[in-house]
Length: 154
Ligand code: ACO
Image 1 (cartoon, rainbow, N blue to C red):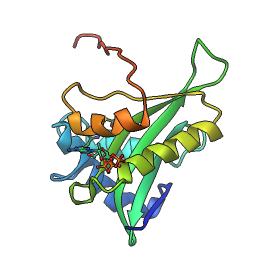
Image 2: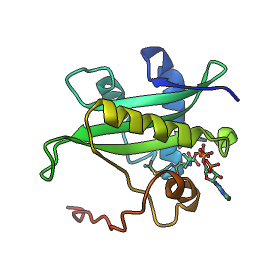
Image 3: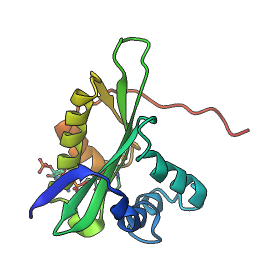
């Protein structure tokens, strides 16, 4: 399978949205979050990928002209370093294209982008029970052994 990893383009909108928030086989559906992220928010997120003043990015995996996965990431300031840090916010590969190395390719490209953006820290989080993702993450990263806490709902 020949996979191209490249920055998202405006022409990818329909397919990217299908993988982001489609009723089936999408990232928000995987997280049972279709009702938590509004269409307006998704549109806003999409628009910021193309805003040079905002450090939010998306790369996609393309096979035979079809977008089959994405990685969304952002950079932010860090009190411990002069350089920014890069946070991988979202990673998704469509069901039928999993276990073919696409997730790994997307993360490897995120690492390249971290270097290009001069971010010496590159990190992400996943659920304790997302074993499938962890099978990949233990191969391409190291376990930071940290817990994430959230402010309670107001
Ligand atoms: N037994 C053994 N090894 C396994 C198994 C298994 N059952 N399942 C996966 N692996 C290993 C593979 O051997 C492979 O390792 P390799 O590169 O050394 O061969 C690795 O795990 C899988 O790697 P890929 O094929 O590159 O990953 P894939 O393309 O399947 O994508 C992903 C992984 C993105 C997690 C995909 O399953 C997915 O989209 N899941 C749903 C959404 C999700 O969980 N996203 C991540 C949430 S966390 C976040 O967004 C930051």
